[in-house]
Image (tube, rainbow, N blue to C red; front, side, top):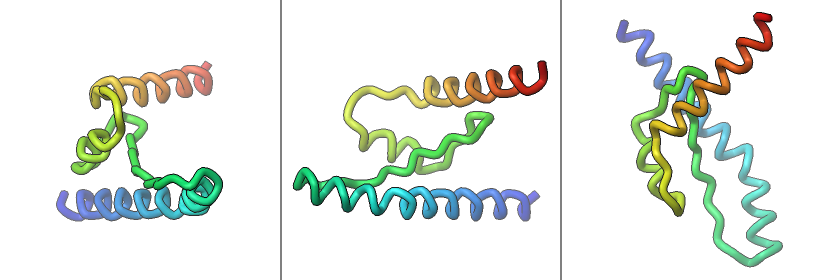
Length: 88
């Protein structure tokens, strides 16, 4: 059980790093074009609605009111939609 949890944590850390690196060029381009500060906020929700421990902290950095449960629900509904299309 501990090995599985450690592997999942490592995968989440790798995904976060990939997302930040993926959008680094876009961040630099936006900073140059519009002379504004930018920051990549890695919000990662699994297909079954799983989130990392730091997810709520990242969501709080985004202006506006965002319910974590609603974001999870959207991810799950999206997964269900894809599965319905594939299985029918």
